[in-house]
Length: 151
Image (cartoon, rainbow, N blue to C red):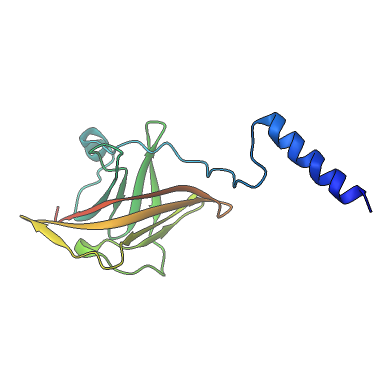
């Protein structure tokens, strides 16, 4: 009968020694997405209508680009293409909400109740980007702006 309380105390003690709180969820690993810059666009021919995702508190650069047939992100100075998934909804400029490939799946959603704001030809919405790895484990999750442009 005494084993369970003793084991629980050992788990708590080990957690305290390791600096971890056993009741706290481990933090989600975050992909280190890099901004997709003009040289990336020209070298990889990423032209055309799209919606860019700019993470809040992440600078001014877009870290995800949603086009009609593909999603694009940049990791370790390499552009990664994610094919369009068949179950995604349509966003402005022909972009979609869901892309899935062998390495990553990305979901780009406008925030509930987010009203589009127009700035010239640009349409801006509050939104959320989540990315999972090949094992469907979350590896990126951020709020920010979805900026849709005609070309």
